[in-house]
Figure 1 (cartoon, helix red, strand yellow):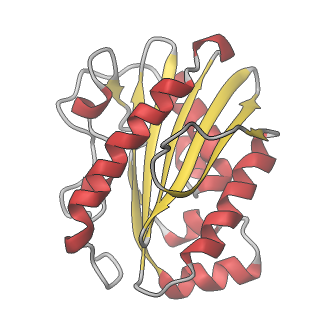
Figure 2: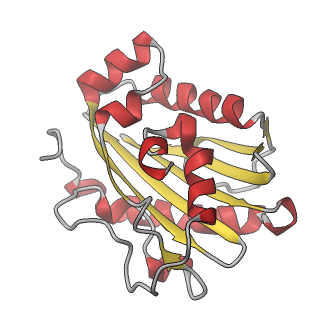
Length: 207
């Protein structure tokens, strides 16, 4: 399920579910993202999520255009085909919680706002979720905080933009285990990662 679900944000909740259900791997010192990937610095690492979580290599990795654009409208697919440079996701298992961190990079001047709105709507529709009021001083630009469900699991999704990067943080687990405060804390850590890397973002498709 993990490989197919990694298409993009429409199936982000399924990815999170895969993170939660995939057996735990050995502890990792860093997220299993190849160093050649320019977006590797934009997603959470094992040190960001802290002890008690293990890198999920079955779900983590470089995203492809076909995965990212699957299920989108023709208009959004055209945008992605012209302006999406590449992306990465890192995933982690806890005893009762799955975490996934996603970053997608676009060309300068790309219609990032339109893609972001479409992906936020996709995430809400696919999870049957609701938009949750944003906390004061929330991280990122034009964010959406979505609470939904997949199968018998709850899903919290925080999706926003940082310049020409669309970032997503997802938590999946039993509803009682999901904490919005943890989601926002992790989003702030990813926001800081993206901010540090802004000046070195590529302007051409990832190799």
